[in-house]
Image (cartoon, rainbow, N blue to C red):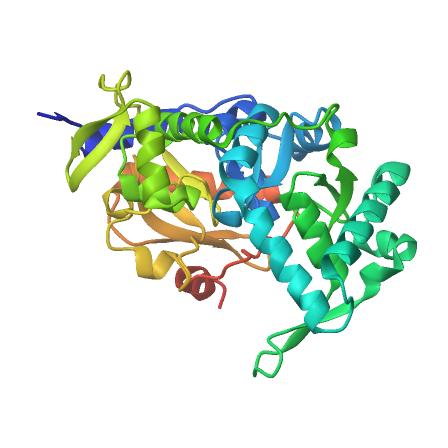
Length: 390
């Protein structure tokens, strides 16, 4: 009979393994132990690190990303952006990113030919890619605007949704750079502005990371990523892993079997865990946290009721993106926002008791002080965050 791992056990693991109850003094360790920090909204990286790293300074994250380059910003699970340790980047690239390249390339080639930019889209694209990479190697780092001056074809415009009510245009440079990044040939370097900016300089991967990323067999990488995910988020369900990675259910089950996962009994049904990770974890001391939108803890599972309760509608947008959340002792109890004057305000959705409420208020004050003159608007607005900003 499968071993039972209930919600109390899952919350104890979450508090300790996600560094929310205990903290961690190393940003790279935090990113690795969380299986990556979401970076679709660049502010998430810094705020997620702040929530787990006592005395964090933004310069510490900058150094890991742009000086030591021990952290890399890559396209990862579900085709979304993550910041991950260098060793994890190769695993994620082989396990999740590599299979996106063929479809993206085919789509771009068809658009180039259909819209009259090239008669042989594949040859045109290969030539533009080569010259774009050559320009990046010469410059070291460059923006899309700078690259367009060296490779004029990047200035071409494509129409998206031709004939539709939502028709729009975008630069070829956007798709070419995205495709090169998906193929692991270039990486996003420093942003043009502050750490909340999503406009990046680009660099050739082999110049940014000496020797580039090692190439791993897909199945080997998926097995390794499954082990890492289970160590972070297990016990969990097959559906959780399928959603988090973007794999098919067949690939998900194959990777779980290869990783040596075993069946366990969760309060809401069947789950899986690593065979060597079934011993109880000691409950951490009481803790609270203010986590940003798209925080890796909030977005680690598909089936979220055991830590989210009935709060999904208030704290997620219609596309399933999490907004800023307030946590107490392993589950979500509310949301938060930063107002224009810099105040961090909280809306509790359930009674947490006086002690926890006081801890949450202290955490909100600490975050406002840390943010200083920086103003954060989540990339994906949620009902409670917008209510707090009225």
